[in-house]
Image 1 (cartoon, rainbow, N blue to C red):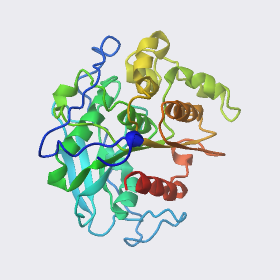
Image 2 (cartoon, rainbow, N blue to C red):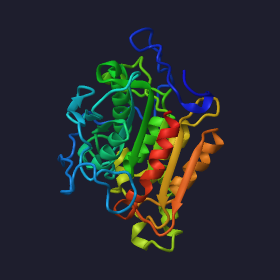
Image 3 (cartoon, rainbow, N blue to C red):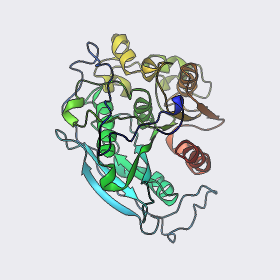
Length: 349
């Protein structure tokens, strides 16, 4: 096993030999019966280059992001990581060669208010990471309103178990998995990081339940965490307008994700909060948490509160709150990538 107690590592002993039991506590009550059975993925948007030669660097800064797909990149598209829903698909991208011991893997998870988006939307991450020698799995998952919590969480955990169970087939190192997500995808990446020892009612449907869903590192980019505090946090930000405080509404992304208006279901909100799963007696992955201070879609206090809770639980956390930056299109991903790459290189070494 690599690393120390807080490294969030996974033993390789199960792989092709004896298997580790994922274990954990089955969530009952609040989450029972909350999950829809099927929700298709959003429309595919294929990764595209911008006409710049392969390998030429992003003109916006020294981000280490090729403007087009890295030369020799291998693609396995629309791999089914589970049955029962057409959304349970992933694209796996790998460098041209596989080192002895296998490739470290970064699971990237798209955002979209829990309702839309597609695995092909993460092309910038795919290019940047494959160019640095990582395998990258970009996931689709069931989305609201057709599928409600914990459906998406179940799916991403099942996808990681599938990838680990098939690590030998695809040349992956099952002990060096990380997760990266934007917005709603950051929430799901964080749930991967904090709930590795928890089981959910639908886990058996995806199989590989004796394989861990743990990751060693999480990159959380401007994601929601504590749904019931979001509107108060938006109101407290002078950069935001009164109309931006809409998360408590019945039609908000968070309410649709839970299948209930969040103000009427505090127990369900707590079950969906990643902080609920933190425990000082359990190994946690390393976290890189980044958020813009003028984000009026998901308030930056969500990430600040997550970092505080993770540290209190004994996790190693790097928190970057960016002045003058907002959500998604106004978040400076190009200039953030050197730090992301340095974090992953250290966490997965």
